[in-house]
Length: 253
Image (cartoon, rainbow, N blue to C red):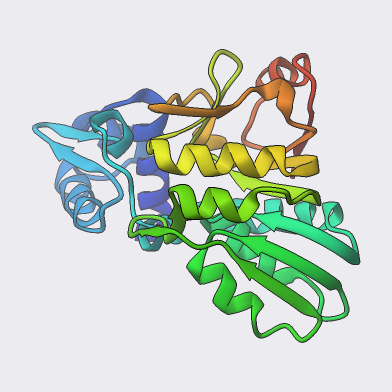
Protein backbone atom coordinates (compact mmCIF):
# COMPACT_ATOMS: atom_id res chain seq x y z
CA UNK A 1 0.00 0.00 0.00
CA UNK A 2 1.37 3.40 -1.02
CA UNK A 3 1.58 6.29 1.44
CA UNK A 4 -1.40 8.28 0.01
CA UNK A 5 -3.64 5.19 0.25
CA UNK A 6 -2.40 4.53 3.77
CA UNK A 7 -3.02 8.13 4.82
CA UNK A 8 -6.56 7.96 3.51
CA UNK A 9 -7.22 4.71 5.39
CA UNK A 10 -5.80 6.20 8.59
CA UNK A 11 -8.00 9.29 8.34
CA UNK A 12 -11.09 7.19 7.70
CA UNK A 13 -10.43 5.06 10.78
CA UNK A 14 -9.68 8.05 13.00
CA UNK A 15 -12.81 9.90 11.87
CA UNK A 16 -15.06 6.83 12.08
CA UNK A 17 -14.01 5.74 15.58
CA UNK A 18 -13.03 9.06 17.14
CA UNK A 19 -9.59 7.72 18.03
CA UNK A 20 -7.13 5.18 16.70
CA UNK A 21 -4.03 3.76 18.35
CA UNK A 22 -0.73 3.23 16.59
CA UNK A 23 -0.89 -0.53 17.16
CA UNK A 24 -4.45 -0.92 15.88
CA UNK A 25 -3.60 1.07 12.74
CA UNK A 26 -0.41 -0.92 12.19
CA UNK A 27 -2.28 -4.23 12.51
CA UNK A 28 -5.16 -3.21 10.24
CA UNK A 29 -2.86 -1.82 7.52
CA UNK A 30 -0.20 -4.52 7.88
CA UNK A 31 2.71 -2.14 8.41
CA UNK A 32 5.08 -1.46 11.29
CA UNK A 33 4.21 0.85 14.18
CA UNK A 34 7.15 3.05 13.12
CA UNK A 35 5.54 3.58 9.71
CA UNK A 36 2.25 4.56 11.35
CA UNK A 37 4.02 6.99 13.70
CA UNK A 38 5.65 8.70 10.70
CA UNK A 39 2.29 8.83 8.91
CA UNK A 40 0.53 10.33 11.93
CA UNK A 41 3.22 12.97 12.33
CA UNK A 42 2.91 13.92 8.67
CA UNK A 43 -0.89 14.08 8.81
CA UNK A 44 -0.69 16.15 12.00
CA UNK A 45 1.70 18.61 10.32
CA UNK A 46 -0.71 18.90 7.40
CA UNK A 47 -3.51 19.81 9.81
CA UNK A 48 -5.57 16.71 8.99
CA UNK A 49 -5.66 15.08 12.42
CA UNK A 50 -4.49 15.62 16.01
CA UNK A 51 -1.51 13.55 17.17
CA UNK A 52 -1.96 12.35 20.75
CA UNK A 53 -0.01 9.94 22.94
CA UNK A 54 -0.25 6.46 21.46
CA UNK A 55 -2.33 7.40 18.44
CA UNK A 56 -4.48 10.15 16.92
CA UNK A 57 -7.85 11.89 17.18
CA UNK A 58 -9.89 13.79 14.59
CA UNK A 59 -9.55 17.54 14.75
CA UNK A 60 -13.32 18.04 15.02
CA UNK A 61 -13.47 16.19 18.36
CA UNK A 62 -11.09 18.76 19.81
CA UNK A 63 -12.87 21.79 18.42
CA UNK A 64 -10.51 22.29 15.50
CA UNK A 65 -11.44 22.72 11.85
CA UNK A 66 -9.11 21.64 9.02
CA UNK A 67 -8.17 24.29 6.47
CA UNK A 68 -9.59 24.27 2.95
CA UNK A 69 -6.10 23.40 1.65
CA UNK A 70 -5.91 20.34 3.92
CA UNK A 71 -9.43 19.20 3.07
CA UNK A 72 -8.79 19.57 -0.65
CA UNK A 73 -6.39 16.60 -0.41
CA UNK A 74 -8.97 14.24 1.11
CA UNK A 75 -11.51 11.90 -0.52
CA UNK A 76 -10.58 13.00 -4.03
CA UNK A 77 -12.23 10.10 -5.84
CA UNK A 78 -15.38 10.38 -3.76
CA UNK A 79 -15.64 14.13 -4.28
CA UNK A 80 -15.18 13.71 -8.02
CA UNK A 81 -18.08 11.24 -8.22
CA UNK A 82 -20.27 13.38 -5.99
CA UNK A 83 -19.55 16.48 -8.09
CA UNK A 84 -20.29 14.71 -11.39
CA UNK A 85 -23.60 13.47 -10.00
CA UNK A 86 -24.48 16.91 -8.64
CA UNK A 87 -24.02 18.39 -12.11
CA UNK A 88 -27.38 16.82 -13.03
CA UNK A 89 -29.01 19.13 -10.46
CA UNK A 90 -27.83 22.29 -12.21
CA UNK A 91 -30.04 23.82 -14.92
CA UNK A 92 -28.49 24.84 -18.23
CA UNK A 93 -29.95 28.29 -17.69
CA UNK A 94 -31.03 29.93 -14.46
CA UNK A 95 -29.77 30.96 -11.03
CA UNK A 96 -28.01 28.80 -8.47
CA UNK A 97 -26.30 29.26 -5.11
CA UNK A 98 -23.05 27.42 -4.42
CA UNK A 99 -21.66 27.11 -0.92
CA UNK A 100 -17.96 27.22 -0.10
CA UNK A 101 -16.22 23.87 0.19
CA UNK A 102 -13.89 21.43 -1.50
CA UNK A 103 -16.62 19.24 -3.05
CA UNK A 104 -18.51 22.24 -4.41
CA UNK A 105 -15.17 23.55 -5.72
CA UNK A 106 -14.83 20.43 -7.83
CA UNK A 107 -18.41 20.84 -9.02
CA UNK A 108 -17.98 24.36 -10.38
CA UNK A 109 -15.01 23.29 -12.49
CA UNK A 110 -17.32 20.77 -14.20
CA UNK A 111 -20.00 23.28 -15.21
CA UNK A 112 -20.02 23.38 -19.04
CA UNK A 113 -19.10 26.68 -20.68
CA UNK A 114 -22.39 26.58 -22.58
CA UNK A 115 -24.47 26.94 -19.39
CA UNK A 116 -25.96 30.41 -18.93
CA UNK A 117 -26.10 30.89 -15.20
CA UNK A 118 -26.18 33.45 -12.46
CA UNK A 119 -24.19 31.92 -9.61
CA UNK A 120 -24.23 33.30 -6.08
CA UNK A 121 -21.39 32.14 -3.85
CA UNK A 122 -19.84 32.96 -0.50
CA UNK A 123 -16.50 31.44 -1.52
CA UNK A 124 -13.60 33.67 -2.51
CA UNK A 125 -12.01 30.70 -4.30
CA UNK A 126 -15.18 29.77 -6.19
CA UNK A 127 -15.75 33.33 -7.35
CA UNK A 128 -12.31 33.48 -8.93
CA UNK A 129 -12.82 30.23 -10.82
CA UNK A 130 -16.34 31.12 -11.96
CA UNK A 131 -15.35 34.57 -13.19
CA UNK A 132 -13.43 32.88 -16.02
CA UNK A 133 -16.59 31.31 -17.45
CA UNK A 134 -17.95 33.55 -20.21
CA UNK A 135 -21.64 32.69 -19.79
CA UNK A 136 -21.69 32.91 -16.01
CA UNK A 137 -22.62 35.98 -14.00
CA UNK A 138 -21.02 35.75 -10.57
CA UNK A 139 -22.51 37.37 -7.49
CA UNK A 140 -19.99 37.33 -4.68
CA UNK A 141 -21.39 37.69 -1.17
CA UNK A 142 -19.41 40.11 0.94
CA UNK A 143 -18.49 39.99 4.59
CA UNK A 144 -15.67 38.70 6.76
CA UNK A 145 -13.61 35.95 5.13
CA UNK A 146 -12.92 32.91 7.32
CA UNK A 147 -9.37 31.76 6.68
CA UNK A 148 -10.08 28.07 7.29
CA UNK A 149 -12.82 27.85 4.67
CA UNK A 150 -12.31 30.99 2.57
CA UNK A 151 -16.04 31.64 3.04
CA UNK A 152 -17.67 35.04 3.55
CA UNK A 153 -19.75 35.24 6.72
CA UNK A 154 -21.51 37.67 9.09
CA UNK A 155 -24.21 40.24 8.38
CA UNK A 156 -22.89 41.52 5.06
CA UNK A 157 -23.08 37.99 3.61
CA UNK A 158 -26.57 37.52 5.01
CA UNK A 159 -27.68 40.85 3.55
CA UNK A 160 -26.44 39.73 0.14
CA UNK A 161 -28.83 36.77 0.23
CA UNK A 162 -31.80 38.81 1.40
CA UNK A 163 -34.54 38.81 -1.23
CA UNK A 164 -32.87 36.24 -3.49
CA UNK A 165 -34.56 33.04 -4.64
CA UNK A 166 -32.55 30.69 -6.84
CA UNK A 167 -33.47 27.52 -8.70
CA UNK A 168 -31.03 25.35 -6.76
CA UNK A 169 -28.68 25.66 -3.80
CA UNK A 170 -25.75 23.26 -3.39
CA UNK A 171 -24.27 23.20 0.10
CA UNK A 172 -21.60 21.25 1.91
CA UNK A 173 -21.65 20.19 5.53
CA UNK A 174 -19.12 19.09 8.15
CA UNK A 175 -21.60 16.75 9.79
CA UNK A 176 -24.86 15.01 8.91
CA UNK A 177 -27.04 12.90 11.17
CA UNK A 178 -30.71 12.04 11.57
CA UNK A 179 -30.72 13.47 15.09
CA UNK A 180 -29.05 16.85 14.61
CA UNK A 181 -29.34 17.34 10.86
CA UNK A 182 -26.71 19.44 9.13
CA UNK A 183 -23.95 20.85 11.33
CA UNK A 184 -20.71 22.81 11.08
CA UNK A 185 -18.16 24.02 13.68
CA UNK A 186 -18.66 27.77 13.19
CA UNK A 187 -21.84 29.65 14.11
CA UNK A 188 -21.31 32.47 11.62
CA UNK A 189 -20.89 30.01 8.76
CA UNK A 190 -23.94 28.06 9.92
CA UNK A 191 -26.08 31.20 9.65
CA UNK A 192 -24.99 31.79 6.06
CA UNK A 193 -25.59 28.14 5.11
CA UNK A 194 -29.07 28.32 6.66
CA UNK A 195 -29.85 31.50 4.71
CA UNK A 196 -28.65 29.83 1.52
CA UNK A 197 -31.02 26.90 2.06
CA UNK A 198 -33.92 29.30 2.49
CA UNK A 199 -33.00 31.22 -0.68
CA UNK A 200 -33.56 28.40 -3.20
CA UNK A 201 -36.37 26.24 -4.50
CA UNK A 202 -34.39 22.98 -4.59
CA UNK A 203 -31.92 22.12 -1.84
CA UNK A 204 -29.01 19.75 -2.51
CA UNK A 205 -26.37 18.66 0.02
CA UNK A 206 -22.99 17.33 -1.13
CA UNK A 207 -21.31 15.24 1.56
CA UNK A 208 -18.82 12.37 1.61
CA UNK A 209 -19.21 9.36 3.88
CA UNK A 210 -16.77 10.56 6.56
CA UNK A 211 -19.27 13.26 7.59
CA UNK A 212 -22.09 10.77 8.35
CA UNK A 213 -22.84 10.45 12.05
CA UNK A 214 -20.69 13.50 12.82
CA UNK A 215 -22.26 16.27 14.92
CA UNK A 216 -20.70 19.71 15.23
CA UNK A 217 -21.31 22.82 17.29
CA UNK A 218 -23.74 24.74 15.08
CA UNK A 219 -26.78 23.34 13.28
CA UNK A 220 -27.96 24.99 10.05
CA UNK A 221 -30.74 22.74 8.79
CA UNK A 222 -32.87 19.67 9.37
CA UNK A 223 -32.71 16.63 7.11
CA UNK A 224 -36.37 17.25 6.25
CA UNK A 225 -35.39 20.67 4.83
CA UNK A 226 -33.35 19.00 2.07
CA UNK A 227 -34.50 17.60 -1.29
CA UNK A 228 -31.40 15.61 -2.25
CA UNK A 229 -28.32 14.31 -0.43
CA UNK A 230 -25.50 13.24 -2.75
CA UNK A 231 -22.81 11.12 -1.15
CA UNK A 232 -20.54 8.19 -2.04
CA UNK A 233 -20.91 4.42 -2.04
CA UNK A 234 -19.12 4.00 1.29
CA UNK A 235 -22.38 5.12 2.94
CA UNK A 236 -24.34 1.99 3.84
CA UNK A 237 -27.90 1.29 2.68
CA UNK A 238 -29.04 1.55 6.30
CA UNK A 239 -27.46 5.00 6.65
CA UNK A 240 -29.05 6.14 3.41
CA UNK A 241 -32.46 4.74 4.37
CA UNK A 242 -32.32 6.48 7.75
CA UNK A 243 -32.04 9.84 6.02
CA UNK A 244 -34.49 9.02 3.23
CA UNK A 245 -37.13 8.20 5.84
CA UNK A 246 -36.89 11.86 6.89
CA UNK A 247 -37.63 13.19 3.40
CA UNK A 248 -34.72 13.67 0.99
CA UNK A 249 -33.58 11.42 -1.82
CA UNK A 250 -30.15 9.98 -1.02
CA UNK A 251 -27.91 9.26 -4.00
CA UNK A 252 -24.77 7.18 -3.45
CA UNK A 253 -22.45 8.10 -6.32
